[in-house]
Image (tube, rainbow, N blue to C red):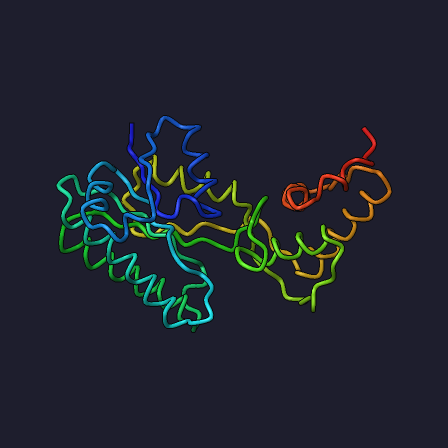
Amino acid sequence: MKKIGITGESGFIGTVLRETLRLTDAVHIPFQREFFGDRNAMCGFVSQCDAVVHLAAVSRSQDPQAMYETNMRLTACLADAAEQSRNKPHIYFGSTTHEAKDTLYHASKRDGRRLLENSGAKYGYAVTTLFMPNCFGAYGRPFWNSFVSTLCFLCAAGKEPERISDDTVELIHVGELCRRICRAILSGSPESAVMIPASASVKVSDIYAQLRNFDAELAAGRVPHPDSKFGMELLQAYWSYLMPHRLENLQR
């Protein structure tokens, strides 16, 4: 049985990944964010793991330079612990399919990947980068994790977004994303990169229209019945933001 740790396991993706791993025969090694400030604790954590999924990162900040430096520091802490570990765990680095974008957040993903790749090559541990598309799902943090979370939150609260883009976006539900990550880890693939494909290509305006339709159905006392996999996943996400009183009038 593989022993797997997840940095950032209390975050949006980390929480779902932790629960998904529990459905397998893998052993979850608990992580605490305080380990980043305690070298001995971080080394102790890494030494217990066959694989570590590095998801911990700051994705939004009013100070982009501080965000970049924080993300690089977190990655450097993990690399240092992997270098000291005798069992040389396989590190899975969570990045984005948009890594090439010209922002300091995306730069922290590019440079963090290179830091781990160079460290792994020098000290003999494997590194695989998980290139992930934008994801969404229930209980995402509005105005933070995903624009889908923000739209769900606003619609559930009866509020209008400031503007709606007509851009087409590539998305994956967080549950499917985590199942794909689990398969990559448990297969033991030696690949240096895993490109996780999006499961839906949708216009932002169409997502908002579906959410407004869900809202209208609920206001009429009816349960929405989407006719697509993406629609069902979107409804699940929207459902998580509804206040209890919005559900009382639903027809059983």
